[in-house]
Image (cartoon, rainbow, N blue to C red; front, side):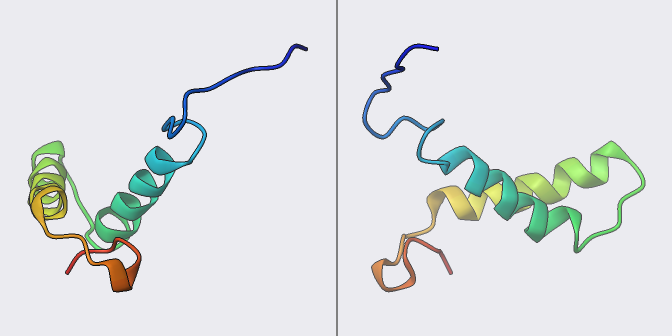
Length: 65
């Protein structure tokens, strides 16, 4: 097995994608029971829009309000 080099801040190595997936899972899938895909899609869209455009807070280590 050889050495692998990644770019700095590569999303696969700093776990940014994994943190986002975990946050969505906790915020949506574990809190809202869903029966169909449309309901889940509505909840995911409702969560992602404020998350993506909210101001990041340094004191909370990047979490949003």
